[in-house]
Image (cartoon, rainbow over the protein chains, first blue to last red):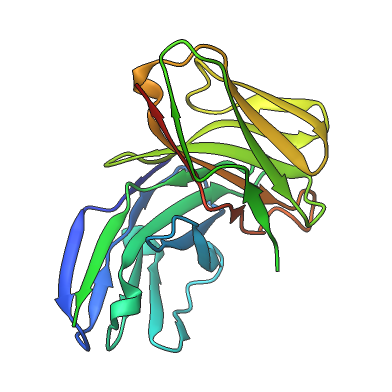
Length: 115
Length: 116
């Protein structure tokens, strides 16, 4: 069975703090994709990153960075120097590398960045 | 940029009514999806379609049906609404095929449906 767990339901930080959102997944597949999406108050899910299971290199994009560790089945997301505009719900998701295209989502982490 | 448009942002209906939620995408994507989002549960797949007139059940298809008569449009139908269908409904689309397997799904803004 496939499963994604985001244990942090809600996180509140003060602007300019760093914050890490945890994502732990379960799968029996040896190959798969992992995704992060952001859902601002407007409602639309915005794609942030895709990582395939072959590639364990960490990735940095501006203030965002992702730490993929296959050994611990984790794909954590860090925001450096958080800003109020980062306030949103963040979802981690898992997909098999087959034709099903089915995304398995975690329950999401609500991030509130206070000025 | 991919644009996925959902016909309504907010809808209020009464129990037993028939409801159509419409979704249109402008990027010629083969795959289209309907999810519902509930607090603490994340997004759950209701149905998806990989081609015109083709559909497959997701995790929670009960109480829903879908229609895909044209490639760009995917409709979610609630035949007889019940209060437990009050939720946020999200439509998404993505590419299909060998180049599509690693492509992200692109989402619409969502429809918040309230059943009274």
